[in-house]
Image 1 (cartoon, one colour):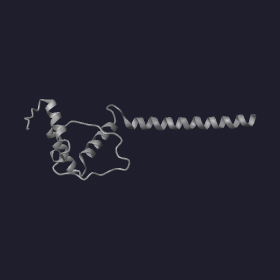
Image 2 (cartoon, rainbow, N blue to C red; image 1 turned 180 degrees about the horizontal axis):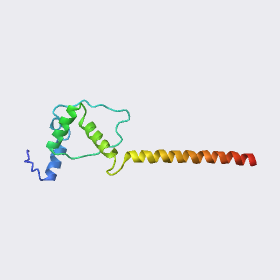
Image 3 (cartoon, one colour; image 1 turned 90 degrees about the vertical axis):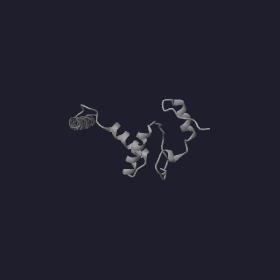
Image 4 (spheres, rainbow, N blue to C red; image 1 turned 60 degrees about the vertical axis):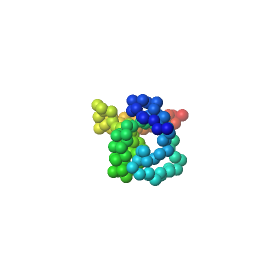
Amino acid sequence: MTRQLDENNEEALAEYFEQHAGEVDLWAKKPHQIRVRRGGPSHTFSVRFTAEELEELQDAADLNAVTVSELIRSAALKSACREPEGVDSAQLRKLLRETETKIQSLSDSLAETKRELEKVS
């Protein structure tokens, strides 16, 4: 029984994709060899893409010789790790160096005080 899909009907789409979940040819131009990592991924996260978005991602992945998952993972991590707007990383590094210097100076002072107290005791 063939059912006409209505793109605005989310239930019909969900049912269609559940029925065709294992059909790789719907998603990729050609099947990709799966590389298994030691320990495997720790979490899986589902994302919905339109057919056009998925095709664009597949083309970009093919162009970069990576899987769609690798492409998405890389882009997501780069986005998550980038500096927030308005943050001056050079200024932050300078403040960090100054703080490290102050901490070292305090540590040296404490060590000297400890030595002096040990002499007195």
